[in-house]
Image 1 (cartoon, rainbow, N blue to C red):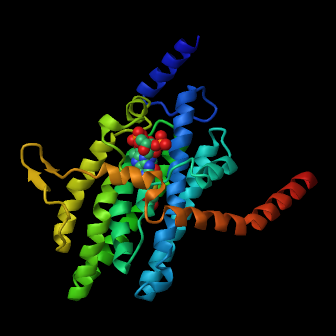
Image 2: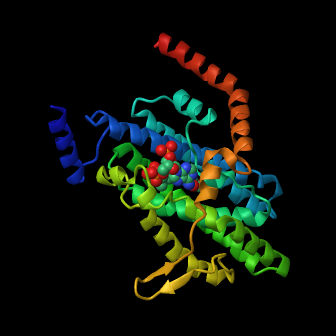
Image 3: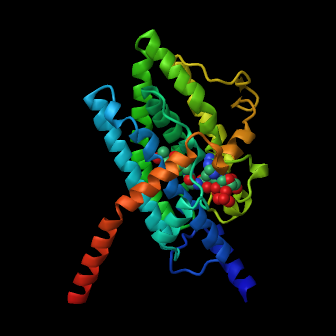
Length: 309
Ligand code: 3HC
């Protein structure tokens, strides 16, 4: 019975049909979606911290307003994604508990510190640029609520990437110190941005099945390559040097060849050994505790008003 059902399910996936919350789905499909969507949501929310760190220190009122809008957007992205994950019979409480206990992951890039204003530009340009690469593909993911959340998120993500590139351009057209600040930010964020796409396909625990179920429409390495090919000319336009001596155009393949990623650093940061891992979770836990009374008040209000209806 279940073999037939799984085959029928796979036929629906192969026929590009969207899977909706009330449809039958294999437990593994549900499980990996809860894993990926909740960790995606965690990344959006934790990602507010490194940039939020510069809202009060933005160089102009305009940059402050732009950064405020971006950080608020990320909170909204987190909410859309938690909402999409909740359609799979998990709860917000379970997902937050998994994050705060360290059981669930969030993107390793957010465990790097933002040491200068240029880091805010580099995050928009590179991190949101990498996120868009991945999220554009996810607009076609087989799970309906996830795909629909992506469409809205991608529209806002494009603004995020443009404002980051614009901030970098302002620095690169500025004084020598500002150009050096921009180069320093690129040096520190380039390789962690490549790690955002996950391990190489051959080492990826989930990719093969996620591609079969069309949760993923492109593999980790395909998206990483797309990101490198798109970003190298942008760095050249900025007058910045990408910190990779092996980076060179390969006329045969039509892509940039690039150097080896430090997967030891990746594993260390993913497993809690990054510069800011502890700080990010402590901040999240403190904010949750400080906001507990708001959640209790909203639940009490909703309970009272639903009883009166
Ligand atoms: N940081 C932390 N963990 C990572 C990671 C990273 N950069 N890359 C991979 N991993 C983890 C995976 O979660 C998995 O661990 P798990 O089994 O405990 O979940 C393990 O490493 C093996 O990786 P796989 O490639 O097998 O895992 P996936 O098939 O899930 O691929 C992924 C990883 C490409 C991140 C995929 O989950 C994905 O596309 N997720 C949706 C997009 C997303 O989450 N992006 C994160 C950034 S969001 C962002 O930047 C917001 C922007 O607005 C700033």
